[in-house]
Length: 380
Image (cartoon, rainbow, N blue to C red):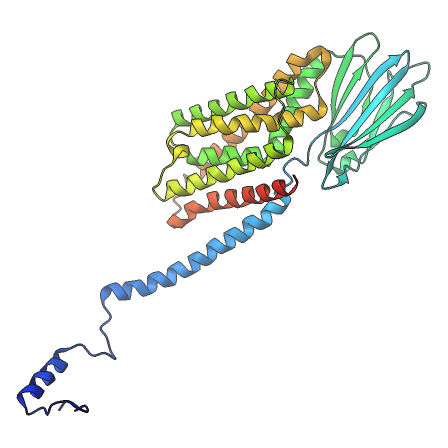
């Protein structure tokens, strides 16, 4: 017998019998049926929850990685310029980079018999420290003598040394931390400029993490060999144009806004990758070479900023500019080759990864780049 409620009709009445039949045919409220859809929804939510935790962990990891990698240009070279002003007397310009208010811990040590003609003059700039000296090298001059860079072996920074003699001959040398001294020799001319500036370009792109992240993002969003060739070529042509214009003085753009915009370009491509994964392809996925060329112009100004810190030898300006750009291209092509080799190696292993893992690279790249944007805008 069905329970009777206050104000309900008796079950033996016609109205009560109809109500009883309706109640008996209705599904029980306290024990609803667990349909197949609902049963499937429960384990799906249980799986999605840890995935969300993994995404949070990825964001935290990217934020931690952003702290050391944000110092993308910590390896800016120091610069030493020595000019002979009169027989065996020289003017010396010693420039060391400054990062976050800290000077590069490298001390210039001249040969023991070299004397200062007057007190050195030190000038503090926003991104470097300049020291000017006037020296007398004695009757034998500087030839065959050793110049040391104390503390260089504890850094990852090179020193570009340019020596110009009174007769117009020049020599250019790149001193590395593993060999923190140089011996003054006769001029090597164009050959020394070629080797030094090529290596300088390779090292700049190699330690320029922001430039490499941009190239990596382009590689991720690009599909097909032909599209990849177009994209890499467009980026190369673009940054070569602005590198030449800025280095030769035809165009001047403040370095801090350029660096912040370079970081913002990485964020843009990372967002385009996410949109592509979600089925909303933008301009970067449809025509990545256009994005590569547009932002490549900005990256060229970044390369020019690094080159302007060490300058160009007056007698070999075209050669130095050309081979610095060649070095940048060598480093860029080497990076692309390594990435493609790793991708080919991974494809040999039948790894089954969840679909959401495709978002790990763009989120990590975008998080690091956004950190750079905030950091560099704050430095204005």
